[in-house]
Length: 176
Length: 123
Image 1: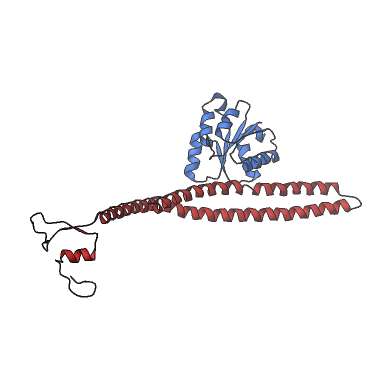
Image 2: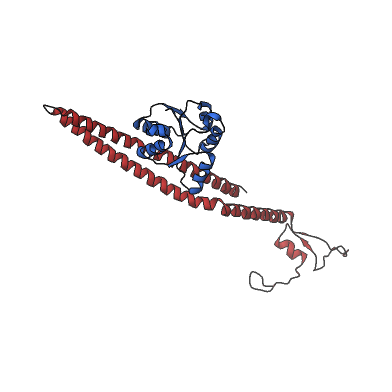
């Protein structure tokens, strides 16, 4: 078996060589031997710290596998759906904002028309009545456009729940 | 005709009440979820408009509850919700909902649906 400096290492190193390399290693004496000088083929028991570390690593690996499987099974698929919901929220709010601003523009134009009628020597009351009716329609259109608030809040709440689930699973992975 | 409007969103209740007023209905009672609506429901209610997803009691649960009562067996129930999947619509109809509107809606659509369910209103 080659060693780190390229030379060949004997598979049967002495006790002194073993202890020099790793002082914490305790050499277990061969029960058949009564000589204090250890035979070359003694069983070397790993220190307790290495066994503990090995157990801990195995435990961590098992938890990582479990968490990865749990993430793959459900939250990842929901995360992809969440992205779509966020895109829909952005689109819905943009549309609503645009509709409301358009209604504001039309409402302002109608108010200007009413001002013109009022400024006339003989105001056309019928025209003013019709314009006020259209103005109320525009005001209602603005209110109706606010339905996006309910629709988007439901989608955001749903997405928030999914993100919380993923966060919890990731935290369990970090804290192992 | 007295309406019962059920929705956990304050914004949606205001929009529904305003929409009903625009089409001529001013006698409206509001509830924030199915439980509150069940407590407010009585024989004077002539039309129910309800959302689906609500805390404490959903719109479908509320509809099933009033359908089991003598004063709620035949009252028109219109569900206004963001859900639009065919399977969801079937679930709502099986719960006793008479018709369905998908948000966002226009007052014209609301009027058509109300008129279709209430011959007295159409008259």
